[in-house]
Length: 113
Image (cartoon, rainbow, N blue to C red; front, side, top):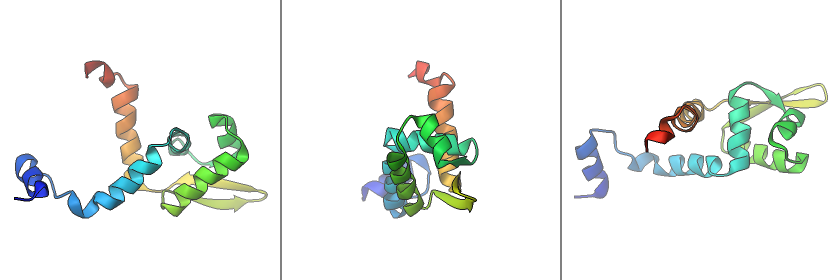
């Protein structure tokens, strides 16, 4: 019996294997503290690069590099507004995962581990 079949039969959940690469890519993006914080701020609403710089305390090249990676992964989009690029979190799965992370780590559930 394959491992994936064992997981499915024990939990009743859908097979993870077809989605493992996609999930792993998302987790790699979230696994970097700077990108996690940028996504968290974007989850609260659209932000310019300058706003994100101030919020995460990182220089513009670093913030722009993180945003480029997240654009590549399809998590964020941007639009030009005059001289500014305004970024928005657009991936619904990332939004839901950030909601779960917020509940798990920020709302006291970590105390019950």
